[in-house]
View 1 (cartoon, rainbow, N blue to C red):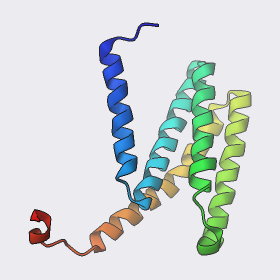
View 2 (view 1 turned 180 degrees about the vertical axis):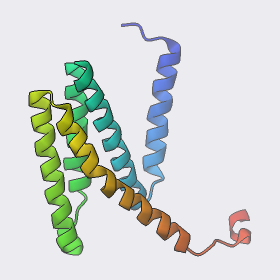
View 3 (view 1 turned 45 degrees about the horizontal axis):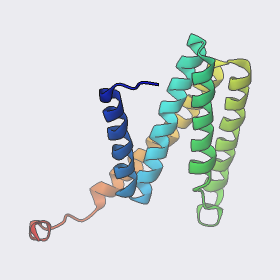
Length: 146
């Protein structure tokens, strides 16, 4: 299969960009990247269901499930997170269940429901990062130049 040079270059750039973002990311930023990827996959899955693109729907729902199961749920620490971690785990389980149904029934509404449930959690996570960054002590200019 022929792939145009500009398409190969764009693909390589995206791959390097993603790897660079992950390599230099803090734990908080990694979770933000997971939320971003999840939200993107959900939007793509919903569009695929609405357009009848079965292959894209399956791919994007599969990606969304992996973001939930392996990324977000896998990163929960019940010992330190306590009730909050338990509730997030239950939310992620529910979302996986709804996505499974969405995949089986070609149900864009179920995908949209998951996106609506995840949106405030993702926003809260982003807000936490902004609050922490605002409270972080400023680095003296002399240290930046060193």
